[in-house]
Length: 425
Image (cartoon, rainbow, N blue to C red; front, top):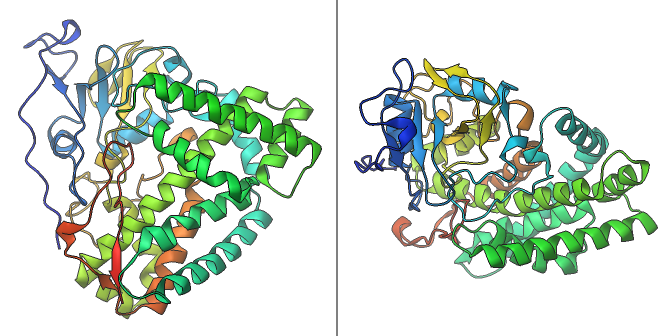
């Protein structure tokens, strides 16, 4: 079933002083600031503004519901890679700056890895990469596969229908991240509650501030505990790095918060959405069932095709005038990139709005690009691969237990995905 792309909204915000109507900002530059409320969409529907901009205005100006002023939005695949690889666009300069955005608060901690530049960013990434070594990755892969087997067996031992998110894609990242970080299983419920608040698009700032303080206090206490009683986990290694002076306590806490938030939310949504996509594209599912060797490329195509989030991620600030796609972005301007739009760029992907598991074109940008490429990309791929592989093997008759239009989708949060996915087999 091919997902519909809604026609682009015609509404734009009144032009701001920096972008007066009829006065281009650079060669072939935009003349309008587009008001982008980032509305929540159903199923796998693609954002209509992103769909239009990547084709017609790949370097555009937008204003969202929160923050101040406006920002550039870069959508074309080539330009997105340029911006995210260029050190003249700074994440660190976003700290304490109220850039227009889709949430009333900054999701990423001020001292976190997502809001730093080299050399601090390089140092933090190296510490995580050293701790997440090949031996630990291999052990996590084996444990993930075994965990998925048990979860799927439990689900299929119950009378159908059963909710994939409840039985498999929800518990899986909790157990994997608990093992990786050394977070006690008894604490995962609290972390999930905090995650829901921090990743919300409409919770008041006062509430998110309280939750951020609570989760920071939790990780400070866990760091103290791991210094006294280290284990074979990533958090113990990061705590030891803090003791050596390789990172600060604030960096340790913010790094842990981002790892946990992304791990708990992303895998649940990605795995559940992948199963939904396959079950609503029966010809693609049939091709995968006929040739299980397609699974690695299928995971990559699903990552490209599924709009995994609402809106955009973190902005950057230009440190000097930079020309992107013939448009001059001035020093001090805020810039967003859309990986979702880049993954639907018709200049790169043939029929980009189609799901095609045999696609062999450019790599997707689902986990970003450049120095800020997602730290959890490999772990997310491992979990998604394990879920799909196990379901294909154990449930060849897998199907939705309700019509597709009755599947409920999450609202009021940054990341997209089904609230529940009732399955039969």
